[in-house]
Picture 1 (cartoon, helix red, strand yellow):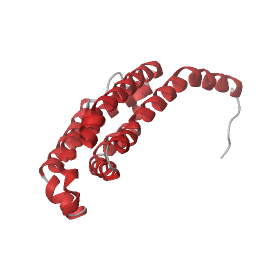
Picture 2 (cartoon, one colour):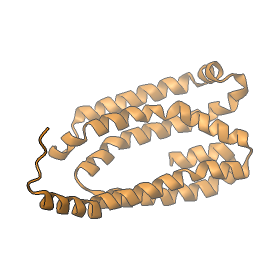
Picture 3 (tube, helix red, strand yellow):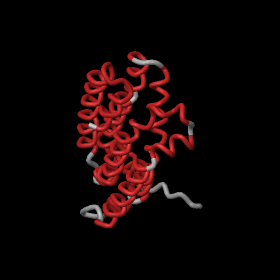
Picture 4 (cartoon, one colour):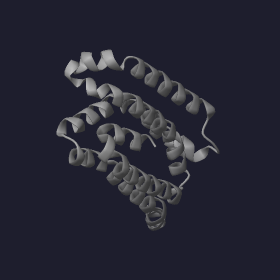
Amino acid sequence: VRPLFSGLRRSISLLVRDVKTYGWNAYLGNIANTASARTDSMLISAFADSANVGYYSLGFLLTWPMATFSRSVSTTLFKDFTRQPRIPAIVIQVNFAWLVVCAAGLISLRKPLVHLLFGAQYTPVIPLILPLAITAVCAGLAQPFNMFMGAKGRGTYLRNTALLMAVLNLSLNVLLIPRYKALGACYATLV
């Protein structure tokens, strides 16, 4: 390994410029979105018992791995996205097919799956799976687009989208969770 240090000053100045524009904006949006997304469990525990928080967490546990495939594929394609004018259709088609098959399977098998994995005492998780599975489909479908925007250096766009989602998520959590508990959190997250 023979590292090259020629052009180091120029490379550092480019890195600092990119961090100030794209990186900082994406970071701020990610903080806001993550913080608002975590208010759901806190609000559920404030307006319901801890069992509802557990049911909600188990619903997420069952549905969220669907979007992990989308995230992984999108992350793997990041470098290719920097050179491409648009997201290849095959990426969108395979991602969509994966998410729909997973959601359909999970929704149709939710009752036996919950009973098999957790037991009959966790039946309250079953109605949460439908909105959470649809949420995971939406989140998975967004992954290639978000990664493409990131590859194109659209940090401001990503920040603004994340801030809008954070405000919407927080508002809906405050409106729906006090009345509908864990199911309200599911629908707030879905919207």
